[in-house]
Image 1 (tube, rainbow, N blue to C red):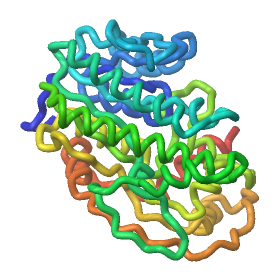
Image 2: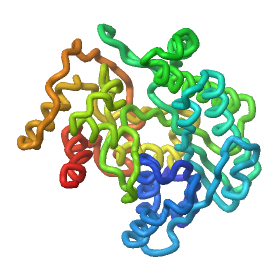
Image 3: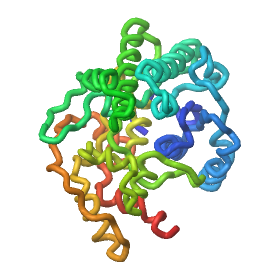
Image 4: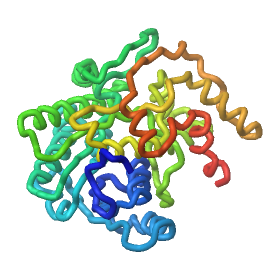
Length: 349
């Protein structure tokens, strides 16, 4: 803990999306630091494996789950927020992005309603001192071949919104554009609300890059980029991860990403800021395959991809690096370690 901490051990923190890749690691990061967690899920029946693991590691009474099926409804979180001192909003409505009839307007509306609904409800809870909302690097930019970038936290990804509105429904990148547009517009709406409302609690956004690593949640399921990375490891070339790596962004170990969220929640020095969660600079997809070939020489991997050189993406992550050092006592997890950790249990299956 830090002298800048605004919350106390034993406080209850609300975490949305608590069973997902980042959510479960965030739960672990909070409970291991002495907090209790109230996790929001759409299906409480599926949370037992995670609850059991938490109890084995930390004892009983550290986590409870509440079920909220439609988080876009007004005051959907009112009961769940009672008695909490902070919240970390990780959940995203992927259905509004990946549905066959998905539209830019519906995806933006869903993301914005979910985020602002939670924050507006939080203003009714006098005990809340801090809120952290997960945005994404795609709310600022999408990497492009042949274009090195100096990226600023002052920017927004207006190009993704234009692309999402312009491309036909059968365009191969339309889903990615819609996701980027939803993240861009919902974060803009958050900061507009923040500047106009000036809530009594602090607000931060964390912008993760490609978050990978072994899921903390032991339940079987699809854990977004971690699962998709396993698919590439198995030679599935139509996995969504191939698109994410062509070209790739920075990488971040899921445990590091979770700690940045927790640090933003606790540390008063971050108030009102956007924060990167960016662990290692982007590498070519063939470098990912090379790392695996060296670590698992007997595993058959797909051949190298015929793709252009990986563009450079320069960004200032000093604030989040300091949070990681302050709350974990270390720097960012090396990419090689995370890539091996992501698949090491999968290869045994």
